[in-house]
Length: 351
Image 1 (spheres, rainbow, N blue to C red):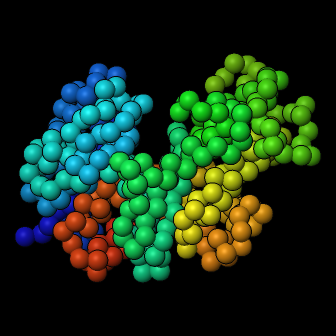
Image 2 (image 1 turned 30 degrees about the vertical axis):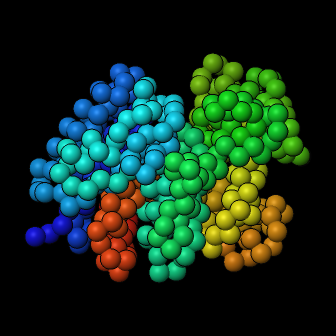
Image 3 (image 1 turned 90 degrees about the horizontal axis):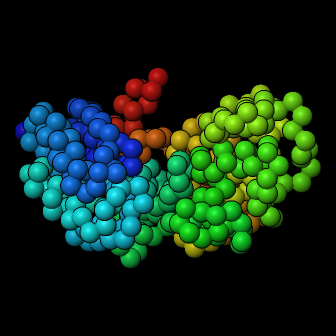
């Protein structure tokens, strides 16, 4: 009988699920909105319904789940997950294993994304650092197939490295985090602050040689008209040469490079993968890192490190969850073949 590997990615806005077979085929994909403000029980019911839908094609052999927040070794949510009310204390692993009728492994969502990217490169990467730029900035590190989780899977929260002390306020309660400068919403807010003449608290991240009048900037005009901006808006303007967008991009590049340099100094990866929705709209953020890092971290940390764009793009966490679940019951050789086929089919689907 063909084994079926399920993966679920729990987000503040949506619950996504897939099932892969042993040949790497995507057998089913399903999405639900997350009733995040209705609390734990409502979210668990929605996930259970999602699993029931995924199970319609056959008996599941494994279930991998990526979730926001810290996770202990038993799959219990430890600490606050800001985007789901009452999520702390949820015994997620036990509850979902019972629903799925299969072994369930739960890890932080960014760690699952890192695992997907490592799985796709397992033949030529032994130490992979992943940075994901989206609504926030997440990070994960995989060494020879093992996720570095630290205490309660909280390791590599690279978005909350302070890269500009006393800088912009971050949602975590600290000032100057990388997430406050290079996440999707932050990029939009910085653009609005600059357009409206407010103190953007750029500090040492403020680039030199940029005109501050933003004459002819359509992006600045939108902000002054009261529009809310995000990274998508900024990078749509960036490709037209918009002066405000180009300044904000320089800030985001500098912030990302500082955070990445901290990761390289601490973890010495042979591969740095950058992904998330922001990178999909601004791939140069990834390619330019290779030029910025030599000025921010000692030579041995970057000279043997490749910088690459994520291969699974915005679905890295979802595919990572399915692959990590499969890894608990499959050999390394089988997992490598499975990941290669999944990536091949994913690329075909995109084109």
